[in-house]
Length: 421
Image (cartoon, rainbow, N blue to C red; front, side, top):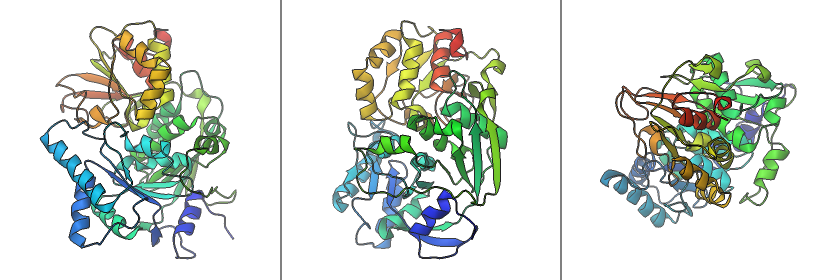
């Protein structure tokens, strides 16, 4: 009997369909479902139109208004009001308002609401972030989420898996963001279409949880159904005192079948910068050339965690942001904000000339808190640099790690941290 991948094992535990194969469509039980202030209102509308008498489980649904909050205008205020009222009507326990709200893909793992072995669905493409915990975490549309909120089930086509094996030792200033940008540059933005990207190897096992979240977060940028990493002691340590319910750890069998195995030697990888207007247009920092910037953003569901802020502070401490650059730093959750405050990071940031925001998606999707004008260039730790993603269609976004973003904010152009330290 052929072995199973971690995703095949999770699906087996969530469906009554036996002996399924790649490409089969099956119905699976959902452990946790969530939406934000953009996708949630539409899901609620369809949910109400179905005539459903209530959500499938008040403890297993999350509503997180994180995109346009604190409310940037009347329309966003109305969207959030709709979420708030629905949460109250349905008795949904996991509703997080401003003050308690964090960026959904950082907040839910931090709260222990998504766990290893779970089938997690979110009405947002970066739901795959939770794959770092060994969960099958997938993004769905608002209409799908409406049905899931009512039934607690989802229809899925069983995806094939690509296995990425990362060997060697990471160079200084190279982390999860550099690994995933490099990987996307290898296979392209359609290289993993409707496939699972399973990240493994000694270099992955040496990564912190924050770096693992970053890698799985951007699997969608290669077209993947999700990204996933097998749980290990680092995962379990992260979950101690955090998990709100029991969970099951799954691991791929040694003889599991993969569509393809891709081996990557990480010692050859420099800090990466993805040029406009696709994440696949990544270059090593040594090949970037002279690119002046107007804005730097450190934050988002990709790189707004405490380790990201520590790295930025290490570079910014005692220095000043370039006079022609706006540096915006956005902690991903209230707990990250509080920890940064306790450690003195916020003092370092503001003394350097940066501004620190409340947790929000903000400028990542061109929402608020740092929208770009025509002709402006930004370096950002976010996950997408499509045309008009952060503002005007004639602006440009360059994707990089917190280390490169912080260094570039000091230099006024895209540089390696080695140039400013």
